[in-house]
Length: 74
Image (cartoon, rainbow, N blue to C red; front, side, top):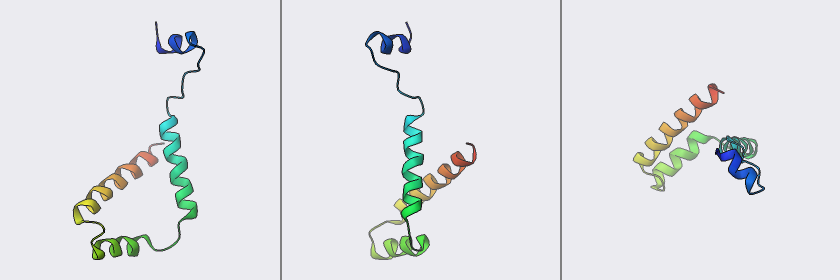
């Protein structure tokens, strides 16, 4: 018995497989649409003020690179 059969048995539809990814894309598009300012300047202010550490910046930078690669593969 597959997962689809279980969902059908209990009267629920199977959730979309990529719903998490679609949500992430929608959230990113909303953020991009409403964002204003210079991102590099804002990041530098966070680093200078100590609100973000260099390690946090490096991790976020790595995640952003992975996100860009994922978006190109769409």
